[in-house]
Amino acid sequence: GAGVSQSPSNKVTEKGKDVELRCDPISGHTALYWYRQRLGQGLEFLIYFQGNSAPDKSGLPSDRFSAERTGESVSTLTIQRTQQEDSAVYLCASSLINPTGGSGYTFGSGTRLTVV
Amino acid sequence: KNEVEQSPQNLTAQEGEFITINCSYSVGISALHWLQQHPGGGIVSLFMLSSGKKKHGRLIATINIQEKHSSLHITASHPRDSAVYICAVSPPPYNTDKLIFGTGTRLQVFP
Image 1 (cartoon, chains in turn blue, cyan):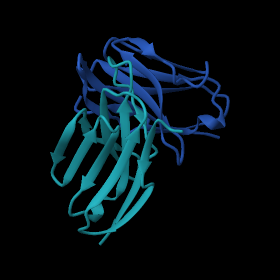
Image 2 (cartoon, rainbow over the protein chains, first blue to last red):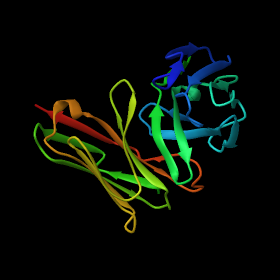
Image 3 (cartoon, rainbow over the protein chains, first blue to last red):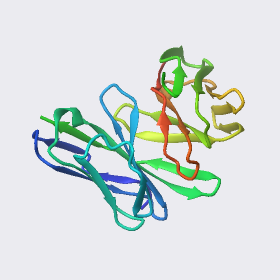
Image 4 (spheres, each protein chain N blue to C red):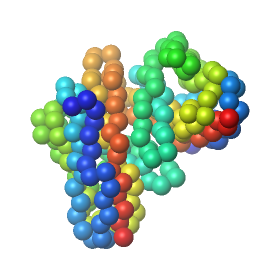
């Protein structure tokens, strides 16, 4: 597609429920990233995919968080047993990776998750 | 201490003023990014640079690798430039583009 697409754009869920957030990267972008932005705070790294493997998942805050990616395409971020502190905007980004560093870093418009 | 520090945190300006936002970082990097975040949350990548200077329209970004410092300049500022400007760096390992972000500079330009 022309840009990074995320769905849903907004999600309100009850505490304790599981949620799935979806990201469609730019076609051909091998790298995919998930970030989180809590209200009034900066962006935090969650996980990085190169193809369908995740060499860096150091930012996932707990084992309730998991993510997968199919090939060099769609990724889903799953949060199990949601807590109120999970409320945030979840941003996905994709980029090309070349030997000297990335280019074409593009963000999606985010999923605003509210846990009530 | 954050690995990426920005200053100022907040900035107000009159239309037409020249604006400078500063970013200092404490880690080795492969690249530095300047991002723009508008109300409503959408993030746009303005620049990615690893040396020297880049210019796009009224925006100029510079980086000094030795001093671990970058600046974003906006010439002839306009109210539509009002946004949060975020500095982010790509730390080691250098075969990824994982970013570490500054806390952002909130810019308001008044007519």
